[in-house]
Image (cartoon, rainbow, N blue to C red; front, side):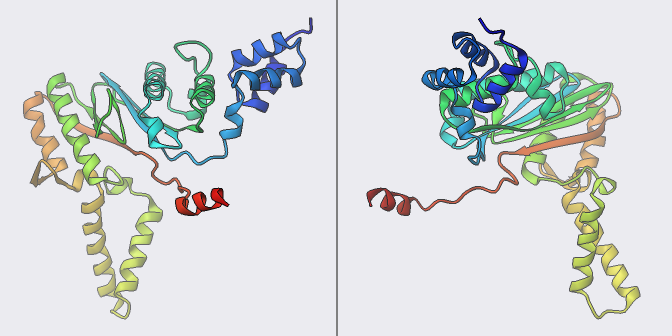
Length: 305
């Protein structure tokens, strides 16, 4: 019998998109002949993944896992919302988030190579799910927040399961205060982030290119004014912009008379120690993905012809 090398298994995986163990079994059953192994996988329905890979996956789920001082958010995409409501898909998203959380993994490629609870790698589990469910799936992104002391709060909007939904938010609070008070504050601020969608923690965190673009807009809107007046308008306009998009400067949705920064400072009394809001992550499902628009009526008409 031919030797089943790791290189041979790798080649078969790249050709078919099937899981590592499935490729190894196929090569074993086919005496190491790769073309026969491809046919074996096709007969078993395990080579579907590669054929699905060019389809746009813009639906799916955001999964959030927080515990103590660490939080992880991942986005796992599918082609349709129907699959996102599938229990197996939900379990896959939840398990991947747990793997990332337990390993402190903050990189998509490293997460794909991490061990999956039921065996193999995370990448294998995704490929096997593609083959089983019949839709393209993509592990799009992962983010981690961690503090040395304190808590990472979370909120998932329209949750369909534990930590699963369309919008997932994490908020990192650094403090030696009581855990209950920090978790309550973290959840409230996470709800604020979900609703207000800030772009940065504070003015110093806003991307320089974004600030320059805002300046250009303000200059163009006020073209023709004297240079000294124009610069004052730009300066004032930026202050207004920062209040709208920077988390600490935004009006707190739970008490609009306060800014988020003021709400955090006041929470220190309840927590029993100073509290610092160190960062946040907001994942909205499918944001930035260009979805394919289809004309359903035209498709049906074409099939009829």
